[in-house]
Every structure is written in structure tokens, then in C-alpha cells.
Image 1 (cartoon, one colour):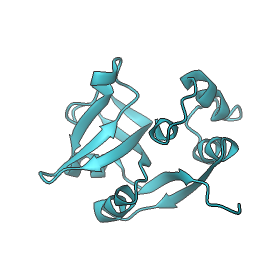
Image 2 (spheres, one colour):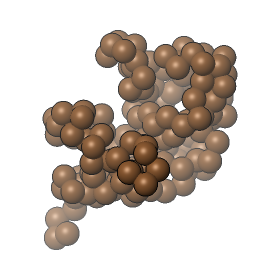
Image 3 (cartoon, one colour):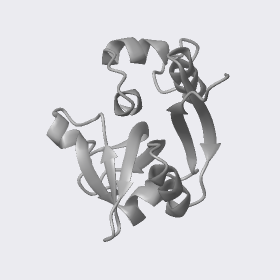
Image 4 (spheres, helix red, strand yellow):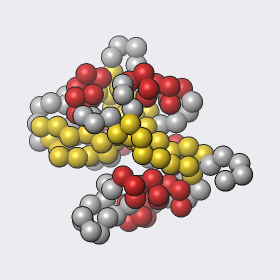
Length: 142
């Protein structure tokens, strides 16, 4: 989703395979995801963001933010993962003025289900560690 934001349209399966960590049998390995973006010509880094203001500053620069959430059933209103998850990557694409966070959530079975908004307080609780992947166009000379 982050690559699509920048106009790179690659099959989801291709990107997922680039991010696959065979040692742990997971597709959501953070360094692998950043490395996959770098292989496709982007700058990418794993970082820690302390609050929604830090996220807002990145969004204002045109940089979507990938975060990992974990929550139990009922803790994130409107999530397509109604039973919760031990770890799931979503893309933050905006913040509203009424305390909601606009996201693309790949757990939605249809695009309309995945483009949603979560309550900022609930999402912050689900995003416990503040870790994020930030992808940006590669700067000239790199």
C-alpha cells in the first residue's frame, strides 16, 4: 500500500514474498519490509514514533506510516479482525480533527472494508511500542 501511494503498482503476492522471513515463517518482518522497499528504489527505515504528532509531521511531508498493532477482540472498534491479533501491519494515511486515524488495513476483504478510520485512543493502545516503518522516495545521489 505504501508503494502504491508513490505510484508503484506491484502484485501484493510479490511484495509479500519479498517480506517473507523463512526463519520465523512470517510475512510481517519489519526489516525485510524496509529492505523490500529499498530494493524497489525507495529509502525505508524502521523507527520509533512517540505520539500522533510525530505521525502527523510525516504525513504532512507526504509520507504514509506503517505501524504494527496487536489487540484483543473488541479493543479496536471497526477492525475487520474482530477476534484481535497478536501482530498486524496497517498503513496510516491521515489524521482527522475529530480524534480518528485514517488507515488502509489489509485485513479488509474488500477495498472499502480496508480503507477505514479508527479511534486514535484505541489505535494508540493497539500500537503499543510506537515502532513504525517509514518509506520515502529515494533522494538524489543515493
